Image 1 (cartoon, rainbow over the protein chains, first blue to last red):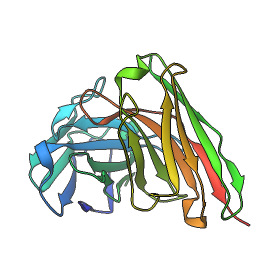
Image 2 (cartoon, one colour):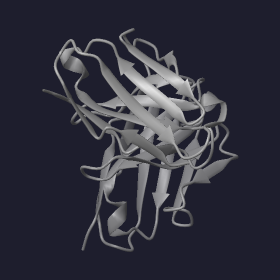
Image 3 (cartoon, chains in turn purple, yellow):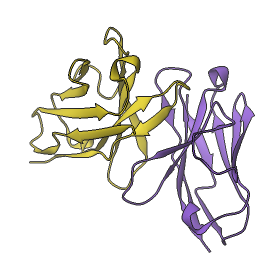
Image 4 (cartoon, each protein chain N blue to C red):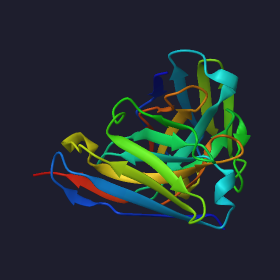
Length: 107
Length: 118
């Protein structure tokens, strides 16, 4: 399954809303779709699993939605610590695949 | 708390071999599937392999199938990746990660760098 993320880069200011898209080339089984955040020099961190469930310790400004082939990660109000690269991943079908990433940068 | 520490990376010539290790602590290792994911310099994430909690089932990306072997030692709380026939395109930071109860990758190590160059 090929995952295509858009946009490639999102330039926003702290406090603004961020909307990231992940589109799959075929339906993702059981909505097995996750979102990860990666900051420079750090390992990825799980944000969302099952398309819409927040991982432990993830602030509620992060939310996931979607099903089938279209998924969205929304950050309701950007905090300065949120600027990073975000990846979607499907784990419902082998091979597991990642999107190419969306960079959220400070405007 | 969950801790995953990778080791074994380094510089190797094309065609060479390397064995990566991942030491796990803070959870019952034998309960969880484990995985290797890699990230080439400046690039995105690529899933490499995973192994079932007992080690009886493994799966690989096409790009490494037949060259890499994943294994684990539950008595030692350790995950391994034997890499043979290394190519320049295998150059990457290799992460080990735990597949959590949600089936997603809920814990990651800091990675070990593998550089394949003559």
